[in-house]
Structures are given as structure tokens and as C-alpha cells.
Image (cartoon, rainbow, N blue to C red; front, side):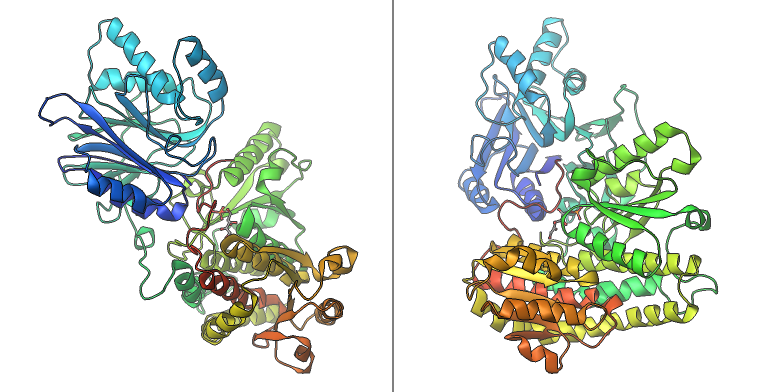
Length: 634
Ligand code: F6R
């Protein structure tokens, strides 16, 4: 989603701003812009230079190359449209009426309508459709008041004006502001939308996410909610919302926070699919080592007392993370015997179930910044806290790939899936890492509750240890096959994905991947549901992808697939090789594994299938239209 990058120092900042924005491109955006303060021009007049452009960064970068805006201070933004179309007028930065104050914002100002009405009554004309434009105008009015009261145009006046305006704003947002009359300062602030400050040599940075800092500095400080900071070339002043100065030591970027490069792959998504054996191996080395001390089945951050108390689990997540949660829920109920429910985080917040006692709430998010998931977790914490009854206490666990995110900061226990940064908007290796974390929890609960025999638990652990090698073989085998098959289906308009039991979430995930990157309409169903409606869609133009793995529902899925074939649908199977698989027109074979671990493998051909269709169509695989990697608005 929107990305903020800001720099203050002694170098020309416009190339740095473009570089920073480039590293935030993976978040998804549809327009971009920068503003710099040019205080060294021949007229000795400080003025703002603003350059904006619709579409990809290359357009902005070309404009800047033609006419480089001067300045040692600047703010920059990639916008993912929420209020108003993606066009140049709505692109950030936005200015006040005097053209001296520029603001970039990530998030949503929920009360912007009321605030813009009050601005209109003061004769201020808004030029864009955005919720952001009110901010520079409000800051402008505050500054006007301060100057009328005899204050001078200095950093403190600037800071105080922004502080005052923050008290008027409702919503979740982060901002960066410059004022041409105070050319040596940037004011930044955050309210539930992440912002980090980078410490360079003689220069300071501010960004929505750590990858933007790579190449500039490896020292950073994440802002906390309600904090505001003043950045000057001499240093940083950090304040809480009551104006108290804050002092914290910065952290160092870890390897996983560094921006990955594409190596020899055409797209990040393909590279990330290829990285899955490594994700699995690292997960196994960390959480399922052979030398676990006796009594410990898996090395996860869950205390014995929590394990003893928990009677049920609720999982909150969105999109692909929710699909991982669904695989987890199947495992936790069917293997470990713990009643588990999965919720769309966006629904849970406004329609939560009645409070259940002794419940573990698990939030799943690769980015750790998904606004819907964070809001649902915060709501659950609040309503459980309000009961003051120990039985309803908030037992929490996060599963994320970004421990340096709001998830990491807000949740007491976090499983770091450690997949390494994922740049492709379509989640692949992080989905695998999330599923693996649920396998860990499953083993933990099953052994603690004595629901399974030690042999059954050992068998599952041993099956998991084989996964990295099986993934390597599978990717090698199916990359070229899926490329061939993808060519046959590139012009298709609708695809149905079927699965049952533990592979039903994989059917959903296969359909989501295809929709996201190839823009082909796809729908996942539990295979048994086909005859209750969706079958009406089938003919020779609607292919059916069927995930059929030997196990409790194998025969059933095969029968459901036959029903599709009888309606002339082309059948693509993800299945083991055997006489039954002859029914499939195209077949992605997977090795003979137990049904329990099969989702870790069945998802891979589906990822490759979607990837190759999108790549064949020449689409922007890593940054599909309208999508964002970090969905920071509700
Ligand atoms: C799909 C995808 C999205 C995300 C969803 C939640 O490929 O990436 O569906 O899974 O937006 O994001 P996180 O996991 O960051 O909470």
C-alpha cells in the first residue's frame, strides 16, 4: 500500500527519493510523487518543488531526470488509491493554499469529510478528492495562527503546528511534512500505520518500511503509535502525543530485512517459489531439530501453562494467511483434537462470536501490518481485558514473517516464520512458512494433550523433515510442465478449483493466486459442493483443477471430478500418479505422502500454474494491478 520515503541531509535528495520509492514499489501503488525544498536557488527564496505522476515510478523518474528538482530535504510517496482515482491531482504530496507546506500520508483519515467542510467554511478550496489534502491546509492554518501570535518561523513552531493538527485527525495513518519556510526540517508522525527512521551519516531518512532504507543505512528506529519526530540534518527529536521527549536506542537491520534481488529469475514471484525448500529447511532446523530435548516435541514460543489452559483456538487472518489458518484449523482439530475456528479478520471485528473461555487467539499475517487483522486482534484484547475474568484472558500468538512489524511489537508471543523478505505481491513462500508453523502447533498440542501416540507424532515430524527435498524435486519437475500447461489455458475466462478436507484451503489458495496475478476469474470450492450449484457453470470452456490426494476423501474428490468431466470440463489434476489419475486431461503429480502433509506440496504446482499463465500474458506478476503487499487500511 502507500509508501512514504523522506530524506534530510547535505546531498541532492531527488535521486535518493526515487531510489527509496523504488524499494517500496513491492507494496503496490498506482501513482507517485516527490516534494523537495530548494533553498539554494539564485533568488534566495525557499520554495517547494513538487513532481507527481500517475502510474509506475518510471514515469516520475523520467520527469525528474528531465528537470531535476533541487533540494537537500524532501518527501516522497507511492499512492495506492483509496479516496479518489489514481491520477496526478490525487497523487501525493499535497500542498496547503500557500504552496509552502507539503504532506504525504499513508492510511486513512476517517473524519476527513467533517474537516474538509470546516476548511471550506474558512474559504479554503480543496483541489483533490483525497482525504490527505486537508492535512497541509490544517497545518497551514495552525502556522498562520502561531505567526499571528508572534512566534517565528522555526522548527518548534512547525513541530507544534503538526502536533496540534494530529489531535484533530481520526483514523490510522502516518505522515511526513515539510515547510519551505523551515527548510532544514521534516516532521513525521504515526498513528497505527508503520514508519521507521533511518540514521545515516550526516543524513536522516524516514520510510514506511525497512527495505526502503537498504543501501542508505542499516540503523533504524521504528516509531510507536502516537509518536511524532522532528528530523533535521543535526539529529532527531522524538516525542509522544503529550509532548514528552522520548529516548530509545535504534536497532540494526537484519539479513532478512534487507531487500532481496531477483538473481537470475524473471520475477520475484518465481524466485520466491524456488526458495520454498529453503524456507522449509530453515523452519525445520529451527523448530523441529533432531536433538530436541525429551518431552519437547517442537521448539515454539508457547508456555506450558498456556498449553495447559487452552481449550479452543480462534484464528484471525485475511487472504492467503487465512488459507494457511484453514489448513492449521484442520490439523489442530483433526490431528490434535483442539476445537479451532478461522475467521476473516475484517468480519470478526464487527461480528465477533460470544466470548469463549480459555481460548488462544492466533493472528496470521506475513506483513504483520494488515490493518484488518491488527484491528481484530486489538478488539479481542480489549473485550477480553474488559471481563477481568481469568478464564477469558487474552492468550495471544502471532504468526508472521516480519517480527519488526506492528505484530511483533503488539503481540506478546510471535512465531517468526523466517522466510526472508517476500517481494512478489502474491504470497508464496510465506504461505508455506505459515502452514509449517501450524504443523508445529499441531504437534505441540497433540503431544501435550496426548491425543496422538508418540509414534504418530514422530511419523508426522519425520514426514515434515522430508518436505524440503520433496519441494525441490517438485519445483524442478513442475516449472516447465506448468509452463506448457499454462499456455493451453491462458485465454480461459473462468476456472474452478476443487479440494476437500485438508486440501480445500489449497483449492481456495490456487484460485486466489490465479485471480490475483492473471486476472482470470477463479473460484475454489469444497469438491462436494460442486453439484449444489457451481456445476451449472461447467462446459468445455471452464476448466476444473482438482486437488486429489490419497486419504480420507480421495475417492470422493475423484467422483466429484468425474462429475465435472461428464460436463465436458477440461480436468487438471494435482494428484499422485496411478490408474485413477488417467481421468485427468493434464496432471501435476505429487509424491505419495500422507494426506496430513500434502498441502505443503499440492500448493506448489498451483503457484507455478498461475505464475506461468500471468507471465505468458505479459502481466506485471510481481505488482498486479490494484493489489498491495501490505494492506494497511481497513
Ligand atoms: C495473496 C495475498 C493476500 C494477503 C492478505 C493478508 O497472495 O498476499 O491475500 O495474504 O492481504 O496479508 P498479510 O498476510 O500480510 O496479513
